[in-house]
Length: 320
Image (cartoon, rainbow, N blue to C red; front, side, top):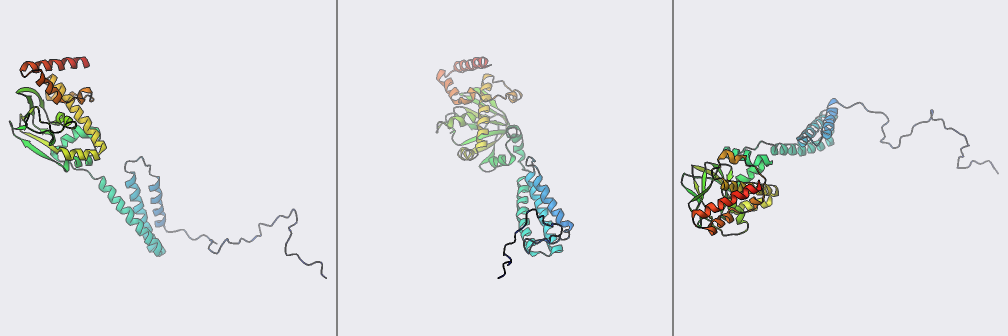
């Protein structure tokens, strides 16, 4: 009996150090690279450089997404050229064609959004003076003035509104050209100049009470042109645009404040009215219609009007 039969387990003696220099490398699997292949064509590397540059563009850059999509589009086009002319790889060409179409469409869409918005000549001064300082985008202003409003004209002497006759529920207007005169029972109150709301007090009061009538008469003192909104559709639009809704609240409040100061000084001219740039205060929350009612309740004569004007002038001096 052979007692020296070899055991199937091989025992490595202690202190044995394997010879790594003469060891033969065995690949992990059949697809492992035995040798590096040659470097790809320059087109391949330029395509990857486009991808790398596009991905490292800082997001704080104003045109970040346009540059990113443009570079991705160029990179995909170069990959298609490389796969078609130098590698003859159909799968690479197909996938990059899909990526090219997606990025190109997105790139065109971003360019379309950045296109210059052309504002009508008649509305350009209104935008620059009232809406642009409040950072209203031109496309939002175009939506505001292009769907449910129109430009109307009045000749000298024609009435925009007659007291106790014209409803305040129908419209809201901004004067674009000319000058209007506001009076109450024949008493002159103030003028309305371009880039000012014609019926802002009535718009504010209408939010609380429907079915009201104008308590003043507004007559064109020159040949006038004004922008007129349908009040119902404007209100619906502002409810869907919270930013523009807040802008209108500020502009209407400021306009009412300016009209209150004009009542204190009916001789206030256009240059002086432009300098009034106060934040809407408590006065801007008051309706000029309530103020006009106080005139009527005090007296029907000119003495009542003068009493009211003296009261508002003393209130103004206390505020200052």
